[in-house]
Image (cartoon, rainbow, N blue to C red; front, side, top):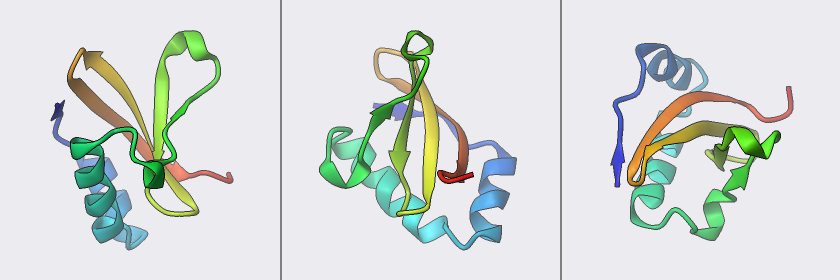
Length: 82
């Protein structure tokens, strides 16, 4: 699987919210096994848009799409409860 490089805004967000290490850990798990239970992978509503998320920690999630069979683009990392 290939994950496209993160946009600088996402990298900055991770630094500001002190999530860089947590994100890197979950990112590596995602590369190995996207169905790993700690990721809590979800298909978001509306499902026809095919936008997914995985857990960075209890509060934050990474939002992503598949650009191809094995190409992923992370669109955002945000507070899951806002």
